[in-house]
Image (cartoon, rainbow, N blue to C red; front, top):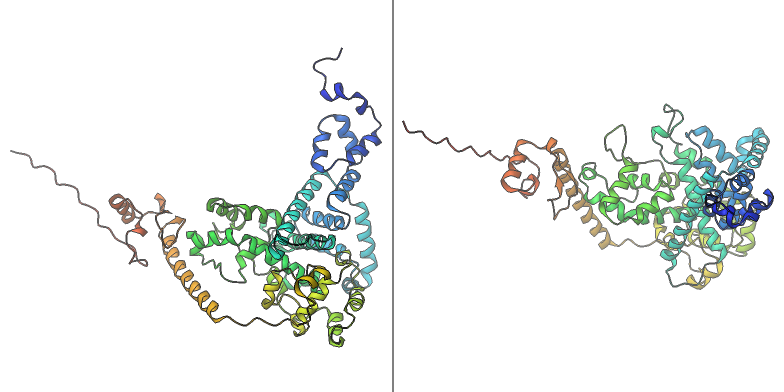
Length: 506
């Protein structure tokens, strides 16, 4: 008779537990996802021991099936970058060299050290082993990539469209992973994240170009730029909500209308998991708290951090680095034999990140840049509209259906005077709001503010002057809402004298 205290799994399936370890490991590798593996190994010690004996192999099998064999190497590189803790420039530089070691740019840069660096990268790749904790993080990141990829396709093509091809799905996901790798490598670090607080907390703009951006052809840089601008649009409602209403942000003159918003740049650099969470919030308080968690500086109380040296600055037009492409554009006549020429141009780029069997992205990039000077081969600010449509993400067949044969060269959009006038009016109103919120902040007010409703400003006891306390006692309203005319000077309310004492009869 079986004891009532015996584990349920032993009672139900003793034959399964008695299987050889190799068979149990094979069964674990057939589970649909890592969450199922995590639950399974907690059921019985024998399953846990079987998993530990082949942890990396089981995880690799499941990730390849869940993520895809084309992306698995890139996923591993992103996971390696995320595990550099504490962070240092030397360790990150070494990882980036390993990732891009097959690119000819690095071969010429390292010179005699190339063979040694290449052998070291192969050795590190062979010694790479997954752990369940890191694999679960990678699986969670992949869910974020899947979510953003679907939303990106909906925003650029619309929900009513022909299904995406496998190449298009892979291209979009790859771009999100590359941007996540860029964020992990180059975002501004806080001091607690550094291995040595005395060292520089980030790479310079030129180092970002050298270690990362120069490894990609121009059309793939445009793909990354499409993802970057989409993510900025994704968080804009939450960021602008706080920037337009928070008293302290107004005091710090945080501009939400500037195209190169360095505060928004810092928020975007925090990575996909954070951006998905921020974009999903709908209430002001939740948005404010999420932004406060990443933008506040421990050294300066509540100072909103910004980043002047991230993607926008590194991608801004500068001297081109893709000389083979520039020479090709100079010699090409009327786009003859574009497909065969594309394969020749891309053949020297041997890194796995650049593999793409369809010439649609290159063809679209060539259409948009054929008539432009070489210095503007990517991230042209006037091409933001076609990047919002993901023009370098689609196969040649989809481009032919949606945009014809792209026979007419791209033309710069004309300046809309009415739109510019309206934008200037909005910027003037924003500046006026900055001045008023700055006065409220200096007077001790905090919290939510709008031009139409100032009653929600919080006046803590420790910040209130005697005039403010008297104002509240008399009117029940904050000082800032009593007078709409005096916004730049404090309102003095005379205290009410006490009633005279009653006169006593002799």
